[in-house]
Figure 1: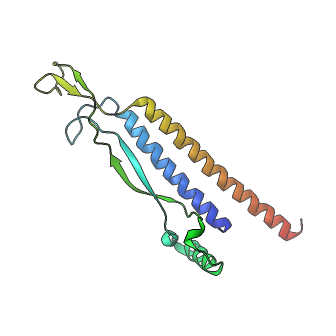
Figure 2 (figure 1 turned 60 degrees about the vertical axis):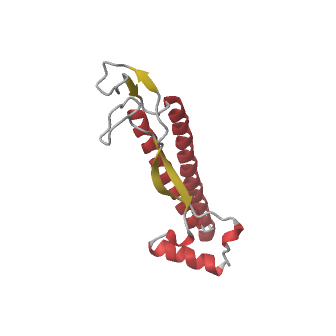
Figure 3 (figure 1 turned 120 degrees about the horizontal axis):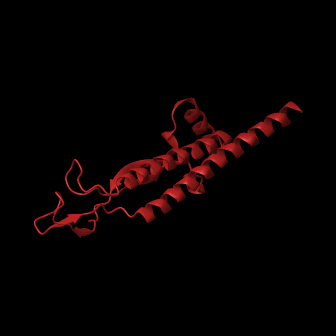
Length: 158
């Protein structure tokens, strides 16, 4: 994998973790929402990811990286990664807990209100893992940048 390829792969991880943190934040913000525009209680959402394909890079960098990989005899089975992309944001249709509250305008005929299926503790754990994933990808980009600077210094004879 080229140096620019490693930066591109880590950048896709940054984008993925940022989206994941945004979705988790939305879940936490709606942890008490019993009425949505679609009707019913809010249902938590999560991001579904998939590996990027070799030809998903755009522009000159994508062309250059593809040409380098072909010249090096790139084989998909070698286990080299090429980043990640968000496939979709999925809604968790698991029903939320029912709470007896007959005075609530969202209560059903029996007086029960469906609460959102958001577990704030689990969402915070997911937020921490997404944050650490983001930090790891940022560190990878910084390391690649430092290696490139060192290579330039060696090449210039300094």
